[in-house]
Image (tube, rainbow, N blue to C red; front, top):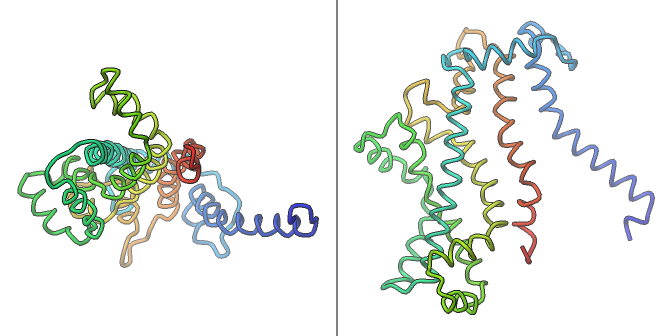
Length: 281
């Protein structure tokens, strides 16, 4: 009914445009600041027209960083990308296998195993951070990519979601595969994984952004500039005390840090939405 009312259609578009403007304005200001000199950024009011330092500012931060951060932003982006990919893929693989075991295998204390996994939902990294750090330190994994990613790989949420999806797969499908001579892993890889592709895609987007935005754990487990992800790098670029912050370089780094998560969301938007809302998958 509302789409046939021209007044409501105009109001709808006005509200939509206002929402887009509110969301996009900070991003535009960040982009403009990343293309100006420090004097132009600090001028009041700051110009909202892009400057002529676009290539120079981005090349400078990619090659040598800025402020207190001595590592190139290119290196920090690589660290963040590796960390996000390992966390996302690792969580999905482990969750698929654990959900597969919980649904299709019979073993003692099966329900207890499920509830032990489920209870870990109440124990985020922030709660178990000191014991986790102690374990990583004892194993000599401080300042390593393994220490950076391994404690964040297990996911009770993903296990629970895949378990619920596998429960909707008809038992006749597993029995038919068994009659045809398919082993458990062949049934898993050739039937369950393809059926779960939309769930996997939706989870990958969520977990990639989760891994990319990690701050507290990398701050604890890394001490070398070369191991810092870009989120920590941005914080270190902001000088304290009397030192001047090179805001044009900080803004350039912030723009670069936004690109990979945005690219993943845009490229996988169709699968992401389908995995969340389409009951037929």
